[in-house]
Image (cartoon, rainbow, N blue to C red):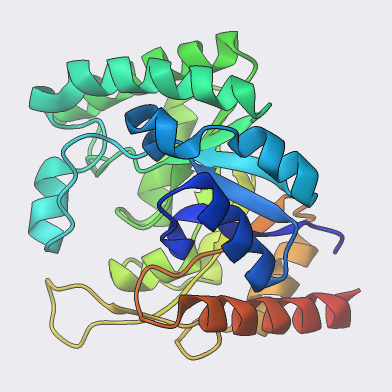
Length: 276
């Protein structure tokens, strides 16, 4: 496996360009998945970032976009507010994504990932075609600018996500696979999901979690290697399906993120070397 190993910039909680470069270097990687929404909202704080990356030998492998109005307080709140599903935020999100594309161009980014929101399980659901139409609109925007979209996993089961992607039939709409999200949302076996989505996976997040013991509530995100993801099986399965995308370390909780991300990097490097 010769895949690049990156870190998700938002995991580092940097508030400006200089901080971000320094913290990426502390993780011990030379690649980053860059959160683009902060650059749209506060360009002054991130002024000169592209040059700083170049001088530090850091390469951007992909981007990530947040949607407006997301509320992750509970599973119920994110179901109502997540992604491009809510009508109240769609027009603002459409404008936001057009700005995301312009920022992505500055870093020569070819893949942008995001949470589209909960995909209805039945095509007969009126909101199914609404989400499908919005995804087609976004797909065209990114395709016209030479970019792919990667949908984050977890909100729905893998078979339902695959059915939705099949119905889109858009070559530039793929999957950013996050095994921890499958556990956090309680939507299946993180290893078996790889088989279901194998034809769509273009990038993976390296994040870990434990399942909830209380139905209807979040699982718990933990440091890579301390949760319920079987990482040896994870890398083995991806190798078996011929995956040749990149991996990006992600940590969204805890107060020792650089330590946790470093430990995750070391584990990933060890397991990837064993699979060679």
